[in-house]
Image (tube, rainbow, N blue to C red; front, side, top):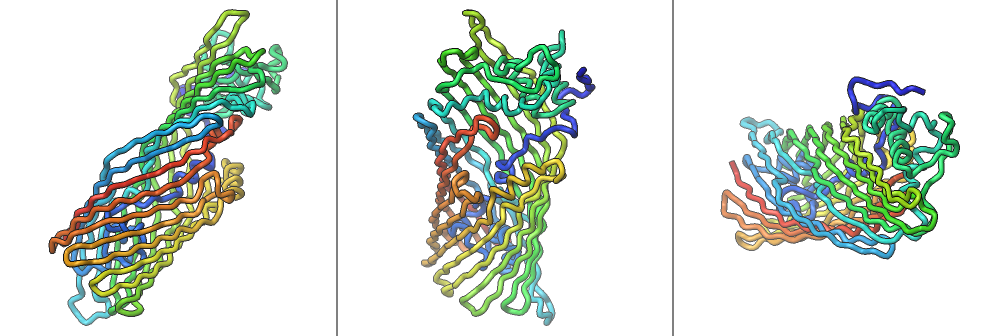
Length: 505
């Protein structure tokens, strides 16, 4: 079957089999605690408190707690430590970065008549909701007879030979581009496996052949795998809130979301198995994802007494529009009748995928707080999010992925507890949080635990806050979602030092 050569090389057709999977759904559906130092010091337990710019991002009614116009800016350092275990190998990485993760202002307009609506507020704020900077490696000897050849075999199974191979006289670069344009992602992966000599068709002379075997013999395989990602998920919030009478606060947030995510994975595999034609494999993949989205929040805070407050927030789903680009590189070393030959497939083609949409889960949050006059407070938040409701769209193109999400992901809760004690101009704070795994098995992504403590100083019109917080989560991360699905155990610890300056306007 002759392949059509398209004008725009690298733009995959709408009929492609998409590369998105359940890990993408989790990545863009989870929020990490960011924001002001005071907010982080209480581990985000601010749903019934308000009076903080990051509290406004959590519960839009929180801006109506301010008695005067207010602004704040926050800087933070993030240190990430990853300890990994893969079969008989272990490794550790440590990375740090410095960034602006919050900034915003609220303007308070007091009522000038006897209206029961005592004041109105309007605000705008930027929050970094997740940090994607991450780096880890896994190495060890896979004793499960699992090689990267299974990745290519899985994609090749059932595909015609003439749809995954280069035409006579056609370069590997042109063939890679044409196959992606006409047939899509799965055919490209099978093409890489065939043209690198990893795969062999059962009938090399039959274009209609659809069955393949590996040129790697069974045995142990040494793996050296590196994962590197950068980027962030951010949110720009437009806030409106009001105070009714003395005790009721209501608010609305309109949120514009943006995603910038870059990832690179690199696998080195070698074996000394008797009968293997292929002894060494190098396989590199890069992914670039950009997206923007919209969500809204509705919230309220009610003072049941001067000391006791309750809060409730509804977070709508976030409706994202996403764009992705990928590149690939594959090299193999084979024993060709006693001569070592190297095959390199480096298309230098950027695969541009059609836009797709992602709908993340909605979330509800209930909050309680007790304020001890001017001396301090204690606060508790409970949130619930059903990750199994995450959906890729158009749904007809993502039936299998959406079914996996529905079957594998769960309804997960988050618990946050925080307290503050004030002494003269000083404030001493601490907090704890626990976040359940979004997976039904509780293992693929484990539960998260975190703690925090901080201190603040009130200069009068200006406040300076400093907080240290740390969280830990253990994941079982598959090297690939197809074929080589053995997992590395990654124990990740995030440590943050946050500085905030806030002042009345």
